[in-house]
Length: 505
Image (cartoon, rainbow, N blue to C red; front, side, top):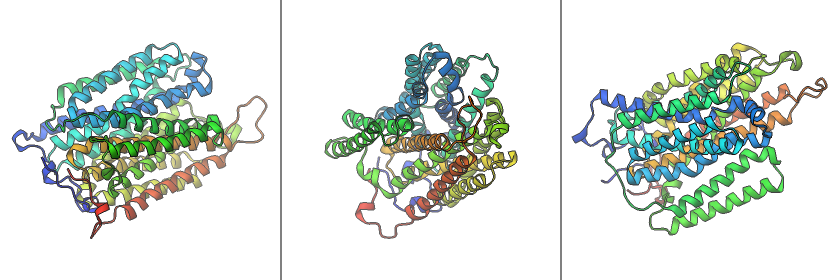
């Protein structure tokens, strides 16, 4: 099957894939059946996104219960991120070659096992192992988009992809709220959160196994294990340095050495992909301008999401009587009152994003993402002392995240051949994870380095108000970059050069 790909589709009024990417008419599905498939894949994507942020509110309790150091307990979140970096591109490519549903079911089984291991763990190494297994499930998102490309009619595809993409921001916020609810009691066991994750993982497995049909397009071929391992090593080193730099010291020999090693490994990976017969990633696809810009947007939007979650969560929980600002919120109140509204708005905005993409194209939606992200972060930088300001800004940011997540897959699907959609969206998923890691590291570093000078003796260090001003202003600038990516990076190419042509199918 030959796939027609155009360089101008990223900026066209309709960002739907070409006619050659439509579902096989002999197995065309009814609107009701399509809705069932979209619902099952949206549920799976939402649950996977929950796994990434699930332990954030309970890291302190995990540290206390397991007797771990602060550096050790940080691996509870870092392990999932690193696991996703290694397995998402590999499993995305494997699904393209050997069947997407089979890969989806296998990944969900591993997520169930990982959730059980994390819930039963009574020491840190076993908990980290469970989190590594949970991290492999990040591959569900690119696989789900590839399934949609096969099973959903072209006119419905932008809305379907937007809904599945919008569940990512919603799931990340929902996990924070659900964990806050389950661990709000003083004597609550943090393992309840992982048992909840187990139940959700089983639900996702049942939904995908029973409601998603086997896909027919398989490219076949061998998996480029050497390319996968070299890319995984490069990403692991990069994310390791980003996520642990604030613990090791940003200019320490260890941090600098790991950054340098990651650059070397990326160079090795590019060299391998150019010489092997069946590369994991076609380098022409990787550097094709719309795809490259979508990945850059992924880094920036991922940064903004974690700046939003961490910045508002920290701010809400600060004691006003000691700092002069903050809202004295418990973990539960911070999650439900300050974070949940933004998560709900992100889910509501998802289908709106799909309609806008179909009518105006993803370039327009990226521009709207930039405005809806930059303006509320700028407002937060000036006014973060009133409850209404913080909650209202968080709601608008939630809409921006959902629109951004909707636009990126539309750009990619319009600019890569059918048989490369899984790996292309896998790389984009990794770009968002990388941005989230950078956001977490930057926010943590800012809040830890800009502290209040004259706190009472025995009171732990607390961030100064200026630290939040810098955090929110930085995130606002990041969203301005999203606008520049859409405006400059996705401009229509009237006479594209050979280097700008997408890879042939």
